[in-house]
Every structure is written in structure tokens, then in C-alpha cells.
Image (cartoon, rainbow, N blue to C red):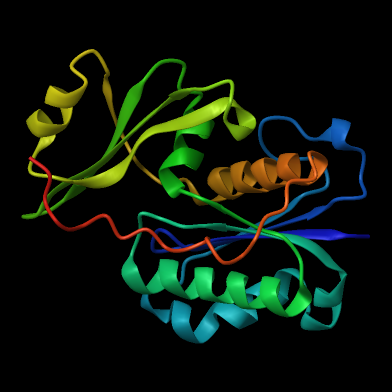
Length: 213
């Protein structure tokens, strides 16, 4: 078996996904494949001390040399959680010399929701504003879903909608298991297309300053 491992820690829970890349690709669709392993760990602030143990609960370290590709959600999300999973994924990719795919958590939500027209995904930040990104179908993008405007901080919803008045607003709410499934599927698609996946450009997203008005 050649494994694909996916990490998602853009919310208070850690999501870990595992797929056998040697399995029949026809068994995978727009989400979880038939043989995928998907686990959610509600760690909260304990992520820093439990990340390694949770990953090993899905794929023991002795099997990591059989990893063929990695994927990680790059946020927006909590500063510590997103940073830790991205650092781990980058380190493994560098040491094992395998491809790493980074995907924004909002993009994964857009894929899960099946967004069929330009749509703002919006996350409220109490007393700070809203983080919003614009997503919609894009035939040129991997998997057919494009990020038309990257997530960033806005003063309020009105400032967001003023940029694209025709685009509806939808909540950017993480569903860990489903979003990890989307991450696996997107990375498996990159594998089937033999995309390179360099680890260097995969960085966490922190779109909280400056405020866009």
C-alpha cells in the first residue's frame, strides 16, 4: 500500500484522514472513498501535546515510510492548531521527500457545500469583524472549485457584500470528518494527475490583519 495522509486542524478538533493510493480510484467520488479511514479528535487546547499520538492512532510511525503523499488544511483557523499541523506536514514531506498538498479550509467547505455560483463564505470574529473568501466553480482549478478572493478580514458583512453584491453569503462552518474527506479527495486527484506538490509554499493562512473595508 502507498498511503495518503491528510491533517485538518483549522477548528477546535483535529481531523486525520488516510487513503490507500493503490486502491481503485473509481471507488472514490466527491468525498470519502470506500476504504478511507477518517477520525476526529476533539482536542481543543490539547492539540500541541496530542497531535503526534492522534496521527499514530491512524497510521503508526513505523508505517510512515510508506507514505506517498500528504495533505494539510492551511486555514483560516486557530493560530496554534493550524500552525502545528502545517509544520508537521511540511516536516514529514521534507524528510520523506514526498509531495505535500495544502488546501484552504474555506475551499474544502465550498467543495463540501457544492457551491454552484460565486459565494462568500463568512466566519464571524466577535468584536473584530468577519473573515470572508469568495468561492465558485472554476474549470481550471483542481477539482473544479476555485478561490476567487482569498479569505481576509473585513469590518462587517456589508463591507464583504459591497465587493460582489450578487454573491450570496454562507457560513464558513467546519465539519471535520466531511472536510477531511474533501481534503483526501483533492490530494488524491493531484496524485492521479502527477502534480508535484512541493512542501515549501504550503503555509498557514492568518487573514486577520489588516482590516479590509
